Image (cartoon, rainbow, N blue to C red; front, side, top):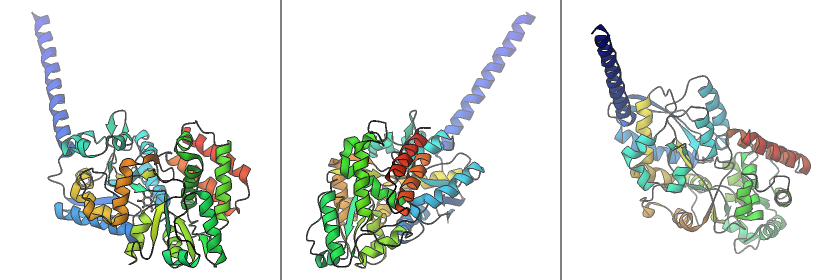
Length: 430
Ligand code: GAL
């Protein structure tokens, strides 16, 4: 008898614990997506501090504050160098247990760096609640998913392999059409040089923009398949394909401006002011120039990076919910705007990128972006290395520094460069 009552007590205890656990989990999952009571500050961390980048962010902030009047937007951006500076600050903040409520990270391996470190919350419930699994491309969702869990909300797609130039400067040099290959591009740079214009604008600050140029040259010289092999061991970094790409890079760098420390908006100004011919830069250049009052098609124009027509080298800015975010509900409220149609169509036309959502309205976008929307659907897609798709934070930092060293050293030490590239691959896989 006594034995039975003890058993009954044990069973009652187990049932009680199970019930508590059930309700705690349920209320936990409700609060996962509930932002109705969000108030206080939203601290958002980006590297979008000025020009077209700040204009894009402002477009989405306006939407956010309209939808969330009880939340105060606190912009903790760290300017410049495509996030190289910002990521340094972010990593120390995360390590010190002081995360913002949300931060910017690229889809792909860069995002995985934070996931592996256990620093991000799983957003799968939010995707289901908002129906994003139906309006975001499945292939893109794969790049932000680890072990079946989705970890960020992508706001845009940028294209990295774009050639920009100034039609007036090109006319002066006798260039009437976009070059179609690396060799044609080099021939045109020679024409610019003959009329006293630098063949290409180079932004040496923070190394990343030279690495961005190299990422494009790798793609243009070896094609998409071999390029994809660089990130999984299929194409060796010390093999003939990379050697050929380095020779192209060396030649291209020899046509660049003499200052080696420009940030990308200043290098862009060399092009729009007619001092430099070409610029290989992501399509955020276009929004930057529009924020400076310049007109697409008149003051500057574009073509796919020579030799990469039909290939879309993509990257995607996405926002996260850090574990331990001080105002979690505010972070979630921001993510809801990031994934919404209104948020994406307010942000992207100003940021110079296309929306991730497949139901975005093309009439809100300029002629370049409408063309990009079409290409994104039909082109061969490859990732951008410098903007997070192919390498995580460690590999990217090592690649940038190898390219920077080569550039600053006068593009002479090819063997040292190859060794640095091999080391970057190893750092990524470590
Ligand atoms: C990239 C980012 C773009 C743009 C660019 C230049 O990494 O994805 O949105 O900001 O840097 O800063």
